[in-house]
Image 1 (tube, helix red, strand yellow):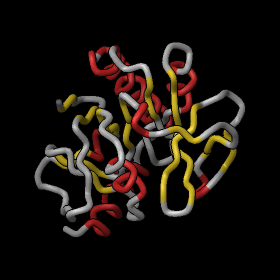
Image 2 (image 1 turned 90 degrees about the vertical axis):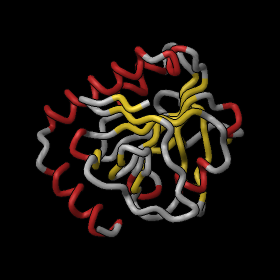
Image 3 (image 1 turned 30 degrees about the vertical axis):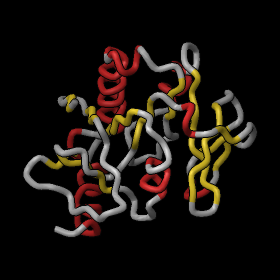
Image 4 (image 1 turned 90 degrees about the horizontal axis):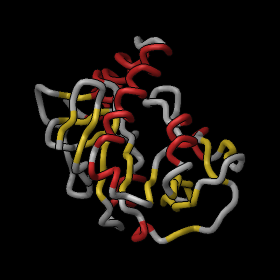
Length: 181
């Protein structure tokens, strides 16, 4: 199955999830991450502002910002910039994603941990994003630990996702029912 067909199939599965199920899986996933030493030992954490078909992150951003330096991506041209999260500064930006509107761009080298979104993941950490390559280009510029987060239905367990040389796999994956380290 090619990436285009995989995206279509996985998005159809995600559309079947209720809002309550999405919230439940988000609480379990991020609760599991908070128990990991990788998280406990990280000071500078990059999250993402979720879209409706992604694991909800808005409450987690607020919660983690109380004890960690939380950063969010902002699209600039073909690249992702990293901006420190400040409450009340998010506005709809590229691709209808809430992005920081103020704050200085920081060097991704300061990040300890990056929580990575995607449409689908396999057991080897391969990721299928939305097809624009933003995260692959970004992850190539940092050595931070990466944890992919997704709904259980987004984890492909019976095959490997097709990859290209520029694709950057996640080092870890956390779903509601799986922690792959």
